[in-house]
Amino acid sequence: MATVRELLAEGLERLRASGSESARLDTELLLAHALDTDRTAILAHPEAPVGDGATERYRAALGRRETGEPVAFIRGFKEFHGLAFGVDERALIPRPETERLVDLAELEVSRRLLGAPRPLDSPRLRIVDVGVGSGAVVIALAVALRRRGMLDEIELVATDISAEAIALATENAVAHAVADAIRFREADLLPEWEVRRWDLVLANLPYVRSDAIAGLPRAAVFEPRLALDGGSDGLVVIGRLLELLPEVLEREGTAMIEIGGDQEAAARALVAERLPGWDCAVESDLGGLPRVLVLRPAPGSGS
Image 1 (tube, rainbow, N blue to C red):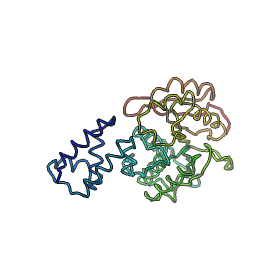
Image 2 (spheres, helix red, strand yellow):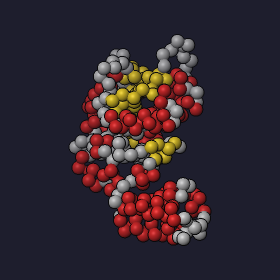
Image 3 (cartoon, rainbow, N blue to C red):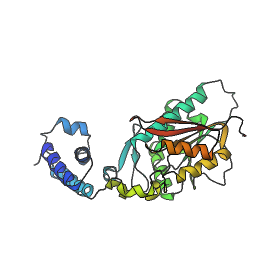
Image 4 (cartoon, helix red, strand yellow):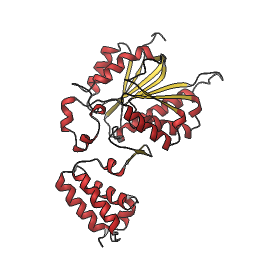
């Protein structure tokens, strides 16, 4: 019977040979998954024997990873903002850098609700998550606001052009008990049949340049290209959303849009072109890279 140490060594050798960019982490995650435990447990007990059933599951998982399949798809979930999200080929795997978008949104909602006193008959804050994918952003935000006792004071809508992504996001919302708090809508950016203005627009849209997709890690092949391809400059879809903002954002509203870590200059130029006079700030992620455009209407713009 093989030990944890021996199986990790076997997996490391196999995945390094297959070209995995994170072979050591992959082997630890896959063995922990096969044993139905976590990485901490297996690393703490390297000499523990591993039964034949778990060994077989682990080696099968290694085989899938050798083809480039993402570890998140093999495990069936991905951790994001302290929560576990079901993931598969229907949507992009949530990235750690996107957690910054959730944090900024939570701060913005808290500022609005806990700042100046609100009249008792104030309408709920209207928030839309454009390009919901797996649902990670809107669900993590809903869970965070529920923890703060604010969920009843907001209205959440989430859209995606992909019906399959909407289905996955709905499943994740059910799993985290916030499905009743979020309305999911299949739409290209924003639903044309729902004429309204939003207090907060969130978006994690495709922003990879079309010619750069071939150079992404192999695992990206398993994700929907629709969720990655941002056109020739990576900002085509984001640019389309920018054009809608004057008509859909409240006069005192805020839009927060994720961008690539190398896109700050191009994104600022696009905002200046499409939204002259608007306030544009860029917030960095924990790695120090520019990550989120924060946009507010020009002073004196109509509502």
